[in-house]
Amino acid sequence: MTITNWPLAERPREKLLTHGSKSLSNAELIAIFLRTGVRGKTAVDMARDLLNEYGSLKKILSLNPNTAVNSLYGIGKAKIAMLKAAIELGQRYLEEDIHLGETLINSDISKRFLTHRLRDYPHEVFACLFLNNQNQIICFEELFHGTLTEANVYPREVVKHSLQHNAAKIILAHNHPSGNPTPSQADKDITLLLIDALALIGVQVLDHIVIGAKESLSFAEIGLI
Image (cartoon, rainbow, N blue to C red; front, side, top):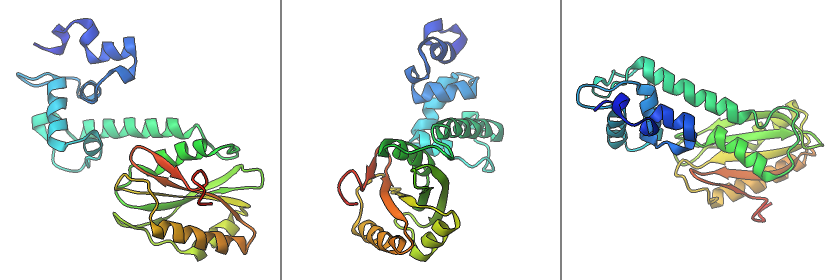
């Protein structure tokens, strides 16, 4: 039976329009992009097969458009490009929640923005939010890219960029590709080192946020700053 023969309430596209995108499973969302199935399989069946083969939605959405076409699942360069465009649209939509000149009034706003920027990297990335005296955002920069388990952070570079942006305050951030946001001793040590280095030029470190897979941790909230 094809999807067009399903009851309207069970068809992914109609289900989304009626009940919203959150009512759909990962397979149903992918099926909307696949649009059609192959002989003996609906688009939803193919989407389920994809999830079974790759193990997660994240791995499917990380497929390289330049890899060989997987005709078995109906995923070619065009459809991978469509999926990546959808991801980018979602990313830009979420990033519009925070923009240059906006005042950061609590750590939740910072965590939400930084999570969407750093969570999906397969390696560690260290970044900074540079702020003025009124806690308004001047700039966001990814300063250091590392490996699966660490990123080398150089205080001199952080100080240099703070001076370039004429920042008065700064929020440090990095991701943990392992998914666990618990800070390591190295995370705590570099935070203290940066606090001391930036204090010499009059820049206050407001927070250090560690991004995990499902949650983020704020140094300020747990008393580490």
